[in-house]
Image (cartoon, rainbow, N blue to C red):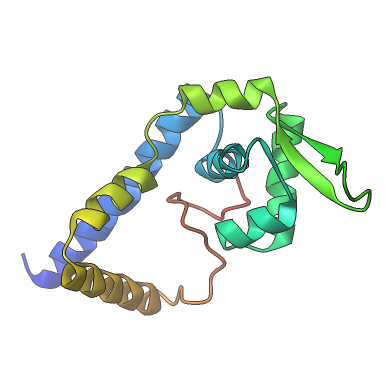
Length: 158
């Protein structure tokens, strides 16, 4: 085999790992990786936060967050509540079903990646980041709206 084939195999393995993780997550916790990440952020912020704060931390648009929150409200995982300090502001709050889903969720694929990435030497991190950015550019994916959530498909699609 040549390097081109080896590169394509490595890309396919990465895509396959995200597909398998997404399937495991859906069966264990009943949510997609993007929904899980949103709920994790709400939990980290004390069980409530604003859609704007979620969008900033996830690195996506407020419209994407609104779509995810709409789905999580429909699924009974979060609720919207008017802010106690500013009536114009809406907070996203975890409900018991959302907390239970977080408890059942397997170790997130991105958490495994972060753990291993942070073990690398600084120069290895820089080299890997540069290579991944180059791959994204080669796939003409430089301008795609994305957050640090490892999943296949569009972040708001699931």
